[in-house]
Image 1: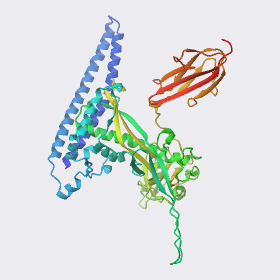
Image 2: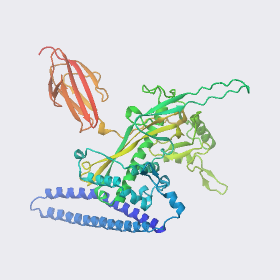
Image 3: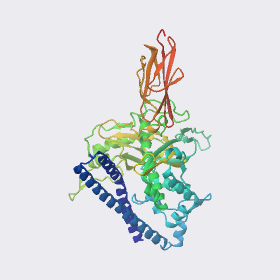
Image 4: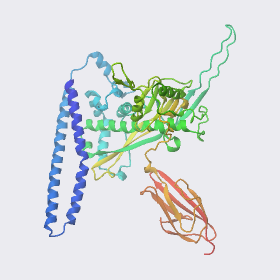
Length: 569
């Protein structure tokens, strides 16, 4: 079906061209707003200013007309190509009976699941939903579950955040496709042990296998001692939002469904990789990353009682190669020695090594040699030589750092179900509807010693990574003051309790500043409400309490100041 492939290629090119044009819509809106300002600034009777503004208006309208015409032309071309492609796929010859049987939809517990197509092997230029056979796509889109979902998704376009107040659950047939498609966007989901669970889960880990005992042929058998441990994984939410042009929501079901699958797969998949390596753990409501665990210098207070014994690995498994200028055998010998820290008696499966493209290029530079014919070669093709193990390029990893080990000894739990909700308020002027995808997951290294973090530039390994700030739930203050009262300790955003000694007077301005401008702040003096920035009255020669309650999203923080009122009235 070469013609089908060519049509799909043309269709992708047209869609990309249309997307580029749609991104320019915002610039036209900016120009229009600027022209409105210019019109209002024209001095009455000033012919020169009026002529200049009229010229700009004519130029704007000409450009806008050409822009809109180009978009409509592309939409027409896309619709024509889609119709032609659909007709070709519908009339395509049926495969032989044996192949037909192999590609039939598998029925499991009454739920239609994906056909046996290897989504993970698809090229990144092809969308997962488009790769499904036409009959499979038609079957998915005709099901009542998907029809209702797409209808409700489109209906979200006209709703404001305050009205929506609800989430849509992704249909099961989409979840299966998304789950597979995530592996194309996430490098590390293919490496670690992934388990789909519900609620809080426990993973049982067998201890090292004891050595059997040699004895006389007829002697008594020695009892072998096996030990079992457990680690606990919870459910933390990974979420993000993507603005979508409203024109896409008005498009056909195939395009909308394809976008949903790709958007959710990429957003969640990329977030998983960063958390697997640098996640900050339960205190930050995310998985515990490999590097974060290796860098721990003391046993956490919430370490599970039944887990394997905690080990301090911050020197043995966080390593820097001191001779950064070394090349050839000297460098690779040092790297091999460093990677040897991953050895444990639990080792199974394959090694992986994650690094950014700059570090990968540096490794290649240390392998450059001349062949007998004078050609320059660097034999590094996605696998570490000598050390062994596949290489994964992740650009968020700092220069010179290499993180890896036995991926199957990291447990990543995924909760069943994924939801999506929307808002039109965030990008109303851009005519976009913002969609937010959410999934729950948790994870941690089962055997931390099976991993290592190495720096090849004689620098300390980066052990802490910044994640996108959770501003939607940031209920902290940046400043708090009570007039006439000196806070002890000095104010800090993460310090919530203060004392103030004796006040200089029995009335004073109380003011709190939140880190997020839309957070709500409630001030109270001895239980009596007071507006933020207002003057509170204190009880003389008695204990007084001032509270500042900050609410942002689902987070609530209470800052408390206690002090003694001044003597007298």
